[in-house]
Structure formats: C-alpha cells, structure tokens
Amino acid sequence: ESPDAISALITALDDTDWVVRRRAALALGTLRSTAAGSISDIKEKLSSQLPNTRKAALLALSGLAPDSKIALPELIQALTDQDWEMRAAAAHALGKLGIDAESAVSPLALQLRDPDWRVIEQVVESLSRIGTPAVPVLIDGLLDASVPVRWGSARALGAMGADAVDAIPSLSMALGDNVMQVQWSTARALWAI
Image (cartoon, rainbow, N blue to C red):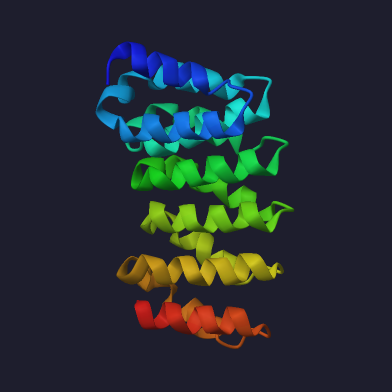
C-alpha cells in the first residue's frame, strides 16, 4: 500500500495487456484507503486517447466509490463517449456513487436513448442505486417505446423498494404491457415495494 505501489498500479492502467489493466484497476479498488488520494491521477486517464486506458480508469474509479465522487463531472462526460463499453462503464461508476451521483440523473436519463441495450442496462441499474431522485425518470421509462427501457425501469423501481412508492400507480398500469418480461418485472417491483 505504499505510494510507489499505487503509482505503479496507476501506470499499469495504460498497459497494452487488458489483463494487466483490469487487475491494476481492481487492485486500486481494493486499496481504497490508500488509493483514494490518487483519484486525480486516475481521472487524468479518462482523457487518454486509448479506449482501453479510459475503461481501466473507469473500473478503478468504480472500485474507489464513494471517494471517487470528485470525478463526477468526468464520469458524466464519459456517458457520451463513442465506445459503448465506456458509456456502460461510466454509468456503472456513477451508480456506485449512489445518492452522491444525484446530479447525474438527467445525463443518465438521456442515456436511456442509447442504441446499445448493454448501456441501457447499466443506466437503469445506476438510477436505482441513486434512489429517490431517479424515481420520476424511471416512471417515465415505464412508458418508453423501447422494451429494454421499460423492462429495466420496472426492475430498477423494484430494486429501490419503499423508496419507489410514488411509482405504484404507474407500475400498476404497466402490468398491462404487451411484453411478458415487462409484465413480470412490473409485478415483482410492486411486490418489492
């Protein structure tokens, strides 16, 4: 847990081998108390020209939550990256911040329009972790034309439990959705609330 070890792990986020990058990012997360002081160095990796370096930095920041909340603007910016894996990783990292990422609700809501369902999956998960401030976005998601958005919104509201009590009328209406997965997730959400 020495500063030299942390520095070496941060440098390893640039490695050409994806296994090295991933392990370095995960190691930084396990050294939370020591690595938290190096978040600004990790944030710098988000502006790398190499997508794999940016992804490793996002993984490291996820592991350092809630200390990584100082990277909130950079995490929000990463939601608009051209690479779907970056957008999904950014959404995941924001979700790890929970309520500390409340200011990310609107940018996350925009990502419900993402063309890749894997990004949408991470977005709805993150919104559920942010909690009550995300309930209106998830209620709107129940009426979306996209099945992954409706399905994910119902699951996210269910994961929020009693914090999503305001969604009960909308969930009750969503029971009549024409897609069985949405109906099932809606019923489970109502049960959980």
